[in-house]
Length: 68
Image 1 (spheres, rainbow, N blue to C red):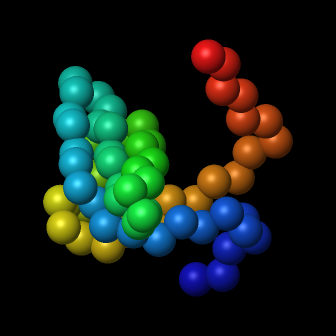
Image 2 (cartoon, rainbow, N blue to C red):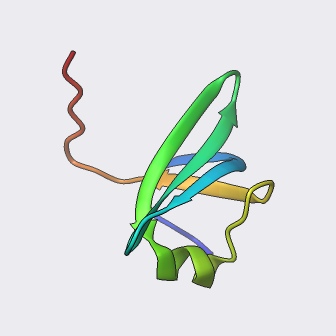
């Protein structure tokens, strides 16, 4: 599959926390860095995500803000 988004972070799923509708998926992208994504439970099932499986986080955004 070709994708226009340049920010593709490959890693391994280390956690899936399911809620009522969505799940928080945690991916270890190496060097002690993890990224989380909030996706639907349906997407988790459609993608066959499970702890230990490889996955790629794709970031495509015009604005990302973090405040401390």
